[in-house]
Length: 419
Image (tube, rainbow, N blue to C red):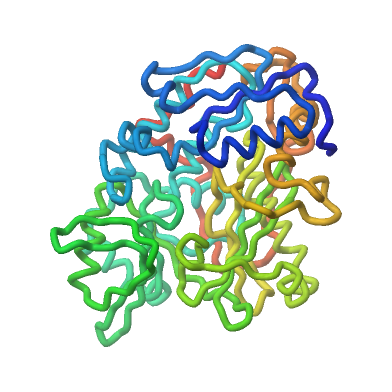
């Protein structure tokens, strides 16, 4: 992978919020690689126009529609961007917007995006591939949970007395509650959700604890209509006395970039007060188990073979000897100032430069006779490295749970025509 490798005559197109740092960073990476500057298509324009058509020679990259108030208002129907609610409407609206894009060669498969943005479906797909994931009673479930009373019943199970409750279509830890229960009846939740006296829910940059069931029930009941996902709380390994996890970016099937996230609370997101840890220190502690972590991230990404790049959240446990996949993120590549792992094709490149370099070769590697994906030269991403690989679990784990072979198609999110 070299940053200057030409794109075989393809032009870049990016669907995103043009003023956002994500799009600016990708634009700069493409220019630095010597390719023609990407054509930027605004999500706002896509939503207003009801779609967009790309030329057959355009490599089309989708970026996050977040951090743009008007786009958020159109997708969620909420004018205050700090509000937590409205994610089910967002999911349906984003799915419709993705389905309205026509033509070009996609780097983000629409059907896979539908799974990646539903934690319940994503969990089921990973479990079906025998990727280690936390135990979950909502894996693959599309029917909504009624509210706190139903959640409380799940939490009575011994293995779920400490559990994470998440909104099914959330991101950036929005609406996540880390709930601890005790046989005596005591309960508390750690979350970034701020419950106002009027009962509204807002995202906050401060992680707080709610020590009463009434408060927790009020939050969960407000979130339930958007869909909830419940997972067993995995006790994380620590780094310098703080709980830690890993964000691993997988590009074209290879684990290329890593951030260690540390926090004194169960939620490690950097924008909520988490801090970056030293990957070299983690690698030293993990020893021979380090390669297992990277392999597990690649296995998780292989469950989405038609998407060029994903961010995999790994939960290390048992003293950095075992790993469990917490989530797979479609837009998990925003890692400022992080360059690729030594010895990988992305060494020395940031996440965006790595994708610019990898995309043409990735498409050549998965060339097929027909082009149902909308690529005029017959390129279609059907697997990693030219063939769909068998996905097996790298680390024996009791966290695996049986799941259906295929995830149900979510209502309101359709792949749509890709040409």
